[in-house]
Length: 605
Image 1 (cartoon, rainbow, N blue to C red):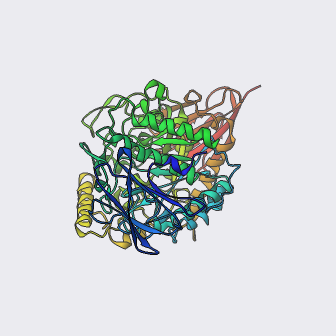
Image 2 (image 1 turned 60 degrees about the horizontal axis):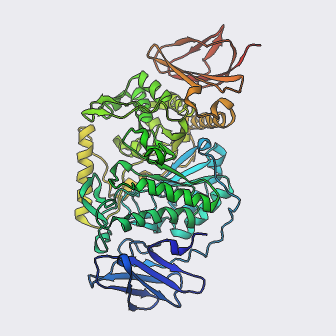
Image 3 (image 1 turned 90 degrees about the vertical axis):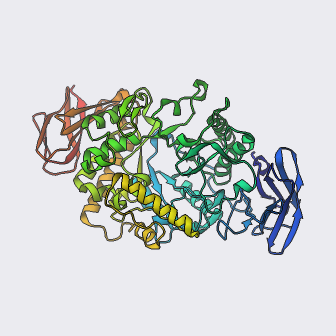
């Protein structure tokens, strides 16, 4: 069994109230542990090899608060803090990870190809903005057919409102969400109800406010840069222990919180030129955890590379991820259904690109891309569908658009049904963004809660500059204003309009079909055929080699009636239709403008 000793840094409390404090600070000559609650005491720590300092104290209880002080530079929180109850500048708190009583011993997870993901921002998901708020909604998610939630980053960030990508304590569960014990309670409840829990982790950068890492060691490097701040030192001097800091974080979430998988933010901004690549070590650590815990733990990449290497196995010198986000699918569908998006997605908008995204995955697989001013990507045609996560919305795509508008607000219900059908009829693992399933009308905006005036102004300026590139004449909402966050909270199915009820029924039907039909339960791309119908329609055939029943989808993306022939030697029957005017007669499907339908068919005997 993995024990607390397997983490290199932290405050480890055992059943006898004995606590081991351990911190890495290779450039410090001395380290003071300063206990500030319930009593004020200071202790000189012992220096170990590899730049670690440690001390073991008796009679320490959960809730004890402390700082570290390296070389008398001042009290600062523990970089490996398990809880920051008073925020990013306050003391760290000792956590008893033995306290929670888990009830999910029989939980073994869900095969990746069966997952229906639902991305959640904890603060904006409910009025409460807490883990308890999410727990109260689990039955509704399950009833819709969702079986996996993906939580946006939870590492402690400044203030109470933030997307999570400005986190500065990778081990500390955000205090305003409920802290570590409430997160465990949520995961436990999810598993009891048959839902997997995935967590978005950020290993490419850390936020600026409350970031004291540089006082402790060379966590950063000047050899590289990222769009969001200093690059992490994965391959320079002293990078062994920097790597261990983040590798231990994998263990921490999966072992102490029973997380089923991790989504790694922007892996293209993690730079590592060592022979033993960081991603190979991640794969090794995950494999060991799977053996230990007796369940699969999935790792998913957000990657801008359009490279098959991301999901190639490590023995082929790949990164070893189980799946990667498929941005090209979103861009192709979004730009085709919402032409106004072409100012932002200049290289998309053609029907054939939607077909390519459906059949192959990457749309850009070596072609010249105007937005990049170079050729980009390699073919993903041979990558199995279960190695891609597809979506028509996520936090980035909604939050970085004009007004944070959701897709239905931009394209309307008829096109929304088309987009959802494309998503669920694809050979990929579908991901929904919270509220998507019922056509949530509240926007999702970018919001922060910093305390430093210069940083706030810098963020405001950066958002304005980013918007000016794509949305000239449009001012983004003030990210610091509390109202920006309040506007982003879900209405949560209260007093749904008829259109929203209609969307919810459509999603429920698609998810049910996805889970139940043999042709939908196979992720091989060889079992899907898609074609362009006169550049105004798309047809998709889904079939299973061991089933006589196939599915045939027709989508009319145009403003005129579309008539098409149903294929092959089959008897076809309409299964679901977005418009009652859709009909099938003499092997011909007739669709009114902007509509979608799915037929099921059997081989003639």
